Length: 169
Image (cartoon, rainbow, N blue to C red; front, side, top):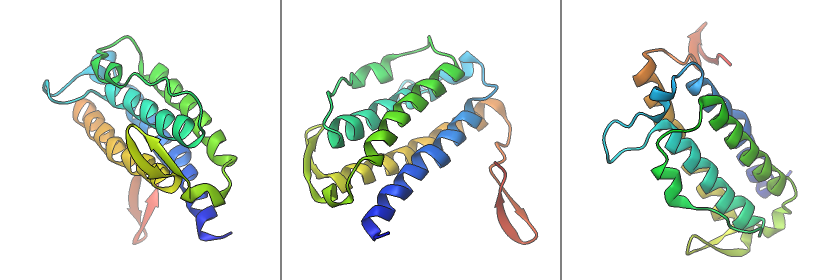
């Protein structure tokens, strides 16, 4: 496997096997009030962040890289203040990531240098995918923090055992 193929493979793994399960665990057991709570008017709720991740990934990968229709209504991701439960939000994100993964699984690595215009930005396919993965990372951290803030529980992803860092999921 060359480095371009490895980049696409690892990006797919992070989105589906790292970030989605962490979001699922963070939302598990939260009430709708917890999911849609905003610390202040300048901040987003967990629900808004999940909708935003789905919208961003679909726009940048499915529409941008996969050259399908861009149906995103970005502001609606931030305006929503309820109406979906934790399981519904996770299902919505999972369906989006399944679309993303289909596009990426069919992506010839030779196309990583191709140019796209996404959200008004001129980027290569590689840059678009890198953006989605780093964007997910940032917002997953916010989701985990808000979940811990609202629930007061340790999400238990990592533990040090026998002198080594181990994952718990």
